[in-house]
Length: 114
Image (cartoon, rainbow, N blue to C red; front, side, top):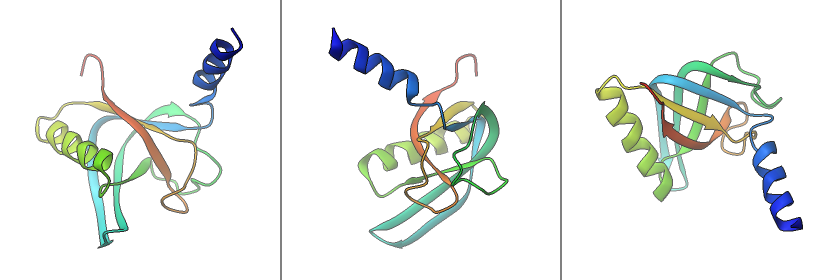
């Protein structure tokens, strides 16, 4: 029972301090410096949620590493959704681990009804 309570608390707290982007995503910046620094900045409309304090820029953007296996899948999803003018939701992780003033992506999913 304690394990179930811990999982529920974790799930409830995951997005307490994270922003999200909703709509047709836009990749305005893709930075490839070397295989250890592959950043994709995704812009869109704010879908609600609070930005963490570290995300102090005024733009509604998130960042992810597109050299990772997961990042390559996300990059492909964003390009496909953008090409078809479909909406999606990108949810922030609540931290700025990849870039000092931009929240990192936690997950991406298709937006219902979009």
